[in-house]
Length: 110
Image (cartoon, rainbow, N blue to C red):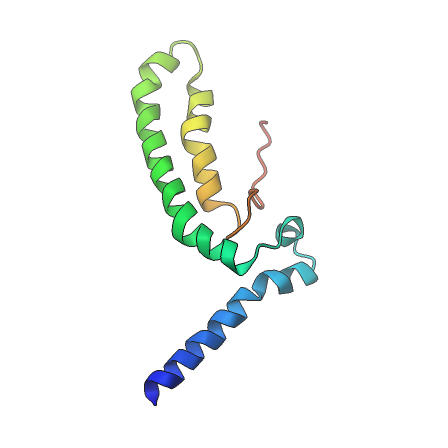
């Protein structure tokens, strides 16, 4: 009986969490006005996309270090850092779960 109650509580809590984007869209939260992702896209983003993007960020940091001797003398180190590290990190850590665009991050230098 305890297993059933635990499963019911977890299912109820999960259902409440999955309705948070809908509630945020109704409250005028600008992050969710752009997109209101479905539960399936949130799960796929959490399980598949985020780990790949985090691995891409680490690999991009390694590539940035390798290319630094070639990009620093010509002044392109900032551009390569943005391409190799910042953009994958922004996609992995700044955008909302299940969204395709970044959320609240505003880059003034674009």
